[in-house]
Image (cartoon, rainbow, N blue to C red; front, side, top):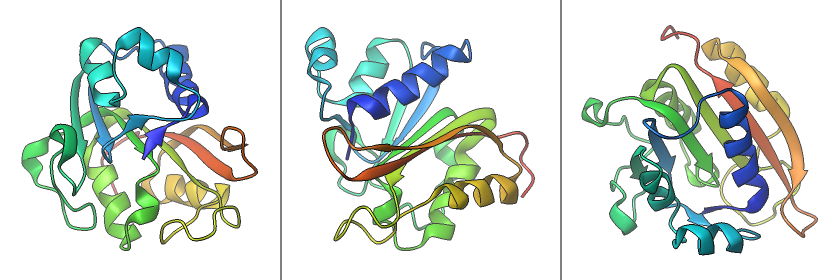
Length: 182
């Protein structure tokens, strides 16, 4: 799992365009995230390949959730209800994680539950028909529009783009949680 250069600019560009920034934010990374393809300059500048260390250096409170427990990630299963003790977050980043979770309803319910009101949820996931033999699920724009409708999220941005230097396509979606109601 990782943030390639396009995913990084999607997340960072959106956050800064909304006059937020990462400092003093509470951020949840779904998956043990590393900087991926096209991000060498970011890795060199900040001296790390591990995404949560970048955010921590910038003053954010960061929690990673991954069954593997690597690099300090909480070894939690996203297809089971998450404990309330992890709290809520201003920013949640799902970059190549949810497609590996069999129980999609539980995964996206967890994302909803841990997102604060006015929080942002970033999804960078494989587009349907574009990634063979990768994960259990693939997505399209309609999936995120229906998700936004179900939970009454506002859509900040949804687009399709290629994976850096590849014919494979990704769905990029940023949704804002408006209130806690289901």
